[in-house]
Image (cartoon, rainbow, N blue to C red; front, top):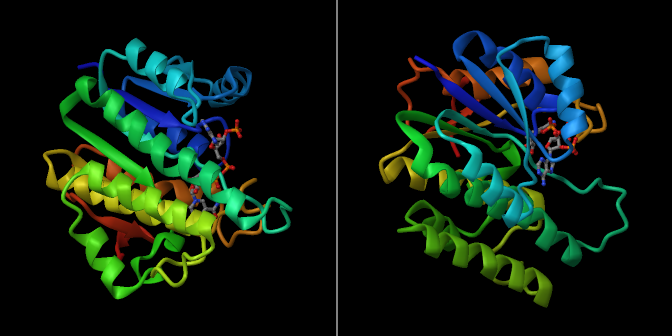
Length: 253
Ligand code: NAP
């Protein structure tokens, strides 16, 4: 049987090692990268004839549409690609909300929804989230909204409400937290749990604080170690659903 895994943002960091660790378990690993030349360099380093490099920018709807159209079968989808503004970035907090949510939440959702028609019956969806996506960053009332979100439209409305409140400068008084990145990951975790409640095998993880470009190589573990959290959720024998994993064990959201 030809099992196909798609890993977004697989040209470097945690995604590269997710792809490497998935290689023995599937027939094809698609390195879905916004810069194909970086994907091809990663493919050379991985040195396997099971690799396929494909262009995908998850912040671009047209790129997502074209990518999804080319896929005929997906057994494993690892939504790893994401962005984070550096602490020293001069972009104001209000201006960081839109791009952060567009890539990390809306891009992840758009790609997953576009691939639903080609997901196999037993397909595994793995969303790479973060400890910073903890539920406690929002007020108790907001927490209930996310825990019980009835459908994707309602979740997207909540995310748009956060963005509007950040842009209006009233997000703290409206019960939101003070991190665009953390909130984007909270929303990804909520989406994972919604997928699991609606017939899909979906789990998410925090890879831990890993030494990658995103962390300016300040992490406490290697990307290779962090990748294991996503990989365990991608394996056919994983019987978890709607779980959030940290340090390779089920953790509290
Ligand atoms: P990284 O080294 O910066 O790699 C991020 C990857 O995502 C790169 O391949 C990047 O492509 C890709 N990417 C970014 N925006 C994209 C877009 N619009 N479309 C397609 N690909 C895009 O980061 P990392 O540390 O490996 O992070 C991987 C995942 O782990 C992310 O979801 C991150 O939030 C999560 N995470 C990381 C840590 C940590 O300590 N590192 C902790 C918790 C969670 P380019 O090379 O083209 O930029």
